[in-house]
Every structure is written in C-alpha cells, then in structure tokens.
Image (cartoon, rainbow, N blue to C red; front, side):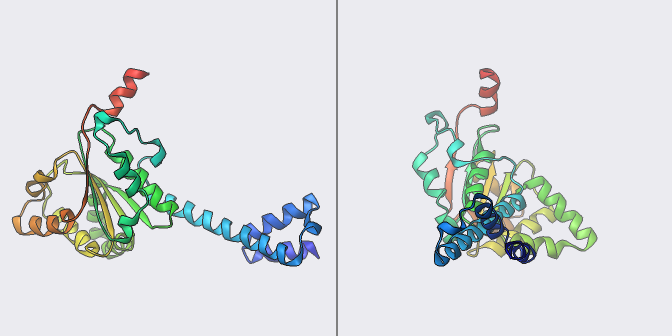
Length: 244
C-alpha cells in the first residue's frame, strides 16, 4: 500500500511529499505522527520543495554574472558604500514600488557584484529577475530583429520584476540600440524595476544615448527618483591580485 502511495506521489510530481514520506517509512517514524500531524508534515515538505525549486528556477533564469550574495559585499569606507542603504535595498521593497537603482564607479570597483547580489536576493524573495551585459543585450536584440523573435525577446524582458543592465555606457548608442533601449525603458516605466551599472557618471549618459529627444525621454524615466550608489576607490580585482 505504501509503495502504491509513493508511486502516486511520484506520478503527481509531489516530490517533496514523496521524499518526506519515504524518509519516514525508512526510519520507521510514521507511527509517531497522528493523521493530522502526518498530513501537515507532508504538506509542509511539498510546500518547501516547490518553493526551493521556484527559487532555483529564478536564479538559473536570471543568468547572473556573479554568484553573489549581499553578505559577501565588502563594506569598505574607502569605496563609499552606505551599508544601511544596501541592506535596505536588499529587502527589495524598491521592486514593489517600481523604483530603479543606478550604480556607478570605475572599472573593477564592484558594481556588477552589488547588482548581482541584490538581484540574487530578489530571486530568493520570489521576484522574476534577468541580468544582461548591455553589449550582449543589444547584440541579442539585433539578432532577434533578423530572425523574427524580437517581440518575443522584448516581451520576456517586460515580464521581469527586475531587469539588470550591466556596463552601460561603454560605447555611444547607435540608432538601433537607442530605439531598443527606449522601448525597454518605456515598457518598464512605473511598472517594474531596473538596475543599471555604469563606469560613466549619470550626468554623461545623455551624450552616450545621443539624439536629444530620446535621451531626455529615457533619462527622465530612469533617473527620476532612482536610488544612487556611487562607488569610489581602487579596483577590487587589483586588491585581490595584490593580496594573492
């Protein structure tokens, strides 16, 4: 009878329930539970299993640059990082409020790591998150234009609670990239959150985007009310090389 029950659990994909019941059978602990307690135990096991698998899917789908966690961030005074600000942002209330985060600073200072850490935390809290290096994002969208999958790609981006665009501003935008960025920003404005990292200060973004009217429209939607993290100091990569 128990084997039949286990097989039904497997076929119904109740994997958490299956493992919990099987473990209790093997340990001979089933008689320690009342019927109500056993039902609660199995339901909790299934709930936890599905929750953990959901988090795993969110993290896998996000495709982060770094496997980063907020606890791993080095809150060095020389980098001008406000620990309280980072910890507040890690609560991800900014996503509920549809707010943006702009992280700027020199190369190697830790912008991408912080963005990935906040994004990872968002996944743990159940938010759909997607990470893109800006050059790969635009290249992917250009290819999508050619093979007819552009609308699908844009729709996928639009559905994310949090979009991370990394290394913005390394090159001026051409007409196609400017148009694509405008569409992404317009889709997300007041609907979903965005994290942008850049080596270039925000006050230089206008000339990087180009075409005054579009630049004004993009920056008005992105910068207004955004949380700013402005990092200073030496490259963290150089510090690690020196230490090693």
